[in-house]
Length: 198
Image 1: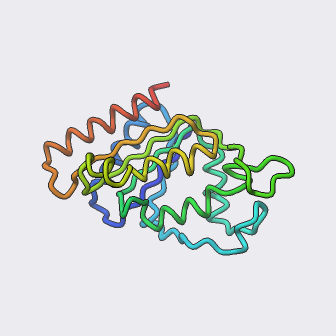
Image 2 (image 1 turned 120 degrees about the horizontal axis):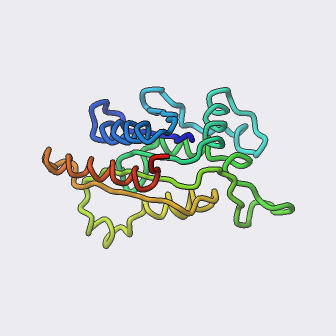
């Protein structure tokens, strides 16, 4: 079984990188084949060009490869910081260019794009690991936890994936090494729960 891991953080020594590495190690320990992309390290181009927008639009070989991987995997893990209640632009661009019509979803015959799409992804489960500098209570009470809505309802829910687990670790900027170790144990626990040994 294959799991796709997508990391989106510009700082090589970020806690996001540590989370991704822990998740990958646990996946491999549990017997999964891992496909890993560090979007910043790969200089992923997030700009969606108008030629790509149609279902059968022309995409370059890099985007084609990402699309093929997304279609083939059994699960997905995404790691990114919370920036303004949104994923970093590079990850939003990955969503725009890779989670596309004909790959991740389709509209029923005769639908002109104004209906609810039918999900096409093979993946059963997704984990999204976030870091944030906003306290949990404020994130939920003041902002309404927009990342939960984005990933669960606006993206993966429409692609047919109902089993989404999201973990948010905060506040990063004031966290201690002891707190981070606790969070990393939770990362391992979450990966084990969603993608157990097989």
